[in-house]
Amino acid sequence: MVETPAFLDSSRPDVPDIVVPRGVVPFFLPGRPVRGRLVRLGPLAEALLGRHDNPAVVSRLAGEALALVAGLASALKFQGSFSLQAKGDGPVTMLLADCTDSGALRFHARVDTERMAALLGADPAPLARTLLGTGYMAFTVDQGEHMERHQGIVSIEGDTLSAMAGHYFETSEQHACFIRLFCRQTESGWRAGALVLERIAAEGGIDPGRELDNAVLDQNRLARSETDEESWLTAKALAATLSETELLDDTLLPEELLFRLFHEEGVATDRPRALAYGCRCSRAKLAGILEGFPPDDLDEMQVDGDIVMTCEFCALDFRFPRDTVGGLAR
Image 1 (tube, one colour):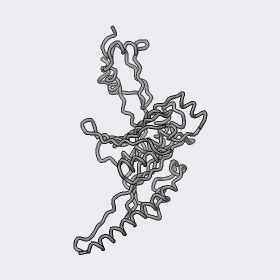
Image 2: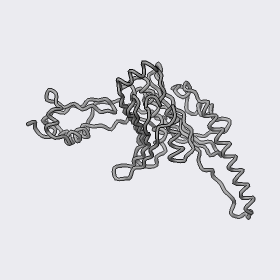
Image 3: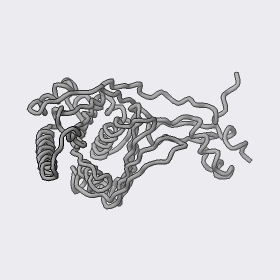
Image 4: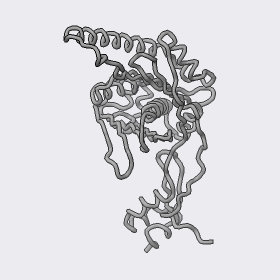
């Protein structure tokens, strides 16, 4: 039997086959300029976070990032992905989380182990800002290989990841958002979720058949603007009452939770979106990376005749016999 060459081999070791059918539930408040997404990763959070040997504070930050990108990616109208990348001078030197339009999630956190140990010795529960330090945060919409990427970059501002994301939308997108993020380790494993509210342009206008003078038009616009602002502030106040226990409770249905929060304003849900384990590594992709190294470097990488590459996203090891990559050893 002839083995498939590494650069053509799309296989990979077994990974969790987990799909959360109602991972993202979009909703809106009828007659009000508010829409949102309720995100709950359920057991998918444990499958993603539990594979990595990170301190609990890093897993908590990563879980919040996964919930955030899951909610934002659900708004994509094309095939592609939405990613968050944070780089700073803190113990977590890099954090990356992304989600495709189909709900496939993955993440990677790069940790300075010595600095992290020193930090946890002084502060067992550091804030996200302390973990990341001073740096920048980038939000990227990738529409595919042959399309231009859209990316917004802002400095890291705020103590929590929710505040950092809010700063991005306020400064880069000029878009009013309210974001709640939670992640913790429960008796059932890691759980993570998000509530994302957006203020949208109000519908309606002036009947073209009516003739109104400028003063009346201005009064109508002002009254509508004041009403919309009040509705937005009310929605934010109600969303702020969401507790970590409620959001991460597997037994509490999304519709029940949304009704608890917004029944005074009225709330309606849209079609839910699935979330899934979504690392996209394969032997072919990693072999392609190895082919870019000179033969002498490949020789130095081998151990007992094999080169081992570990995927940073799913923590799986891929073994490549040296004589199958980059030609035979000299």
